Length: 386
Image (tube, rainbow, N blue to C red; front, top):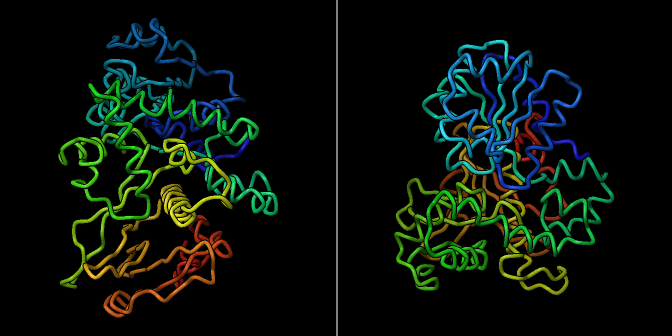
C-alpha cells in the first residue's frame, strides 16, 4: 500500500460535525484511500453512486428514511456521489439531523459534486483533492535509491496508481486510461457534441507544455473558435486533466500580462494522448517533461501542505522568461527548470532586479527539496520554506 499524504489529514477531520468531500481524477486512488482509512471500523455503511438502487434511495429522501438507511452505522461513505441527484440536500440532512454520523462523499469530477454541495453544505464540509501519487509518496514507498533509478520512467509514464503497480503493462494501462476514462466526465457533464474536438485540443495542449498557450493559435489547430477553446480548457481543468498557470506582472511595461501556460496533472497522460511513450534517451522533449513534472508535483505539494501562495510564470515581449514564479507573504521566488545542471543560466536581471526575487535553478540533483512538504525549515530560501 502506497501511503497517501491525505490519509492523516482526512482522518483528523472525522466527527468534527462536517461532511468530508474528496474529489480528484478517475483512478487516482480515492476509493482505495478512504476504504483504507475505514478498514478497521465495523460501523461503516458503504454506498456506490453508480448503483441504480442507491441512486433512488438517496435522491431527496426525508430524515426518517435516511435514519432507516443508515441504521446504527456511525460512518457513511458514498462513492461516486456526483451520480446522485440531490446529493447536496441529502448530505445536508445527514450533517444537520444526525450529528453523530460522519458522512464522506467522493467523486471523480468537480462538475457536479462540488456544485451540488456548494450551497447546501456551506460551512458544513471539509474538502480535499486527491491527485495521482506524488513523488514524495512514491519515494517513501520505494526508498530513495529505487525511486532515483525510476525517475526517468515516472517522467514518461506518470504516477497513476495502476501504472505504478503494473510496470510491465504501463503503456496498455495508460492507453486504456486516456481512451476510456479521460474524456468520460467531460462528455457526460459538459454535454459536448464533438468529442473529437476535445481530443484534438488535448493533443495540441500536450505539444505546447512549457510554452505560452495562445487560444487563437490553438483554435486554428483544432478547428474551433477561441472562446470554445477557453471553455473547453476550463472543462478539462474541472475534470482534472490539465491546469492553467497565469503570467506574473506587477510594474514593468513590457511584461506579458494576460498570458497563460497549460500543464497536465500527470506526465503519463500527457505522453499517452500524443502517443509518445518512448524512453527519455530517445526523446526531444525532455525539457517539457521535466517542467510539467516539477510544476504538477509542486502543485500537489502546496495543496497537501495547505500552503497559501500564488503561482505564475513570467515573460516579457522580448522573450525573457522565468519558468515558474511564486509569491508568498510579499516575497517573490523565481525558479528555472533544467534537467541538466550544466545548462543553467541566471534568471533575467529585469526580473530579479525589479522584484528583488529569491532565485533558484531546479535540476535533477536538487529537485527533492523543491517537492518537500511544508514545515521542513524556515523561510529564508525556497528550499527551507517548502
